[in-house]
Image (tube, rainbow, N blue to C red; front, side):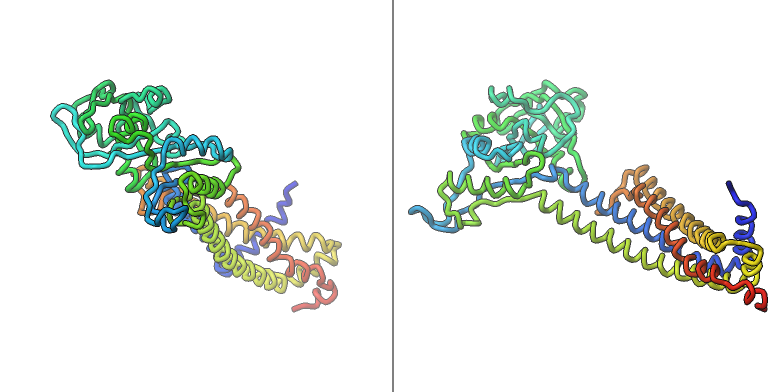
Length: 416
């Protein structure tokens, strides 16, 4: 049941000292406001940077370099060539590997032609597993499949820039034939890159063909340029990176101490480092905001001490008429919670409103300010902030409330 008299008293007390209450409550308001804005901005920065990861976040890439250590009678500086057999060996010997996607690129100076249109593009030989490593949106048609691989079909999946240059007036490029370094490939699909940044611009210029077709057509039989791998769920990427390198060293007679023979990139490790950075940013935001909130709470506590001092005679009369210490404590604490809760809630609304406005503008205009992506307010943060306001409000009024409960009615009635 709502105690109207108690709420009226709280309202009159706040109204009597409007400026003092507002200035003190501003500390709580600013603390919550800064917490929401800083965490929202931090999330925007995180979204902007993680959007640059347009590949599987636990992928591992391995490629060959020159050996740096003599081994088994062979000199340093030897070139190593990855093969299809290496791919089969990895699948057979390393059960922790979920996906192995070998890849090769068509090197040299050449152009891709369609009728009277011609331009230079990147041509990659891929397998169907590549989609598990580097997601993309197949816009029309399809991607490379297993039958294409088995039959070494000369088919091609082209990006948006290829369509723009070679097929400016073609509504349906599917089924058309393009010439790649003198060999004709039938277009069976088109795609759009996923992600943002320069990588997406470059991906738009790519033509994908089956790896087996590239190997056979361009005299790269059994040759693989590099391998991309994704571990099975629950398996760390570092484990398959280590095991794969060890297996390849054994197969290609490379010294176990030769750290330069194989190059690798562990996307999971890089992503975890980025996540650690943002955890630090979030922690700093909490630290700054909590410090501001604590300063505001101390101010509210001082206000309540002054209120208790001003209302000593009133409290004495209440106790003389039979008011219990608990009722006195609840009155003071409730008043403290109202001040901190109202100030914090306004700060929460203001901070959320700022973040929501920025999010709306960025989504409507489809913009990203450098590495800063679309900011977000975590609903869990809002809930935590609400609970924090109630708890801190109670703590701010606890000492003044205890002091009020200890007021001696006889002494209080003599107070001038």
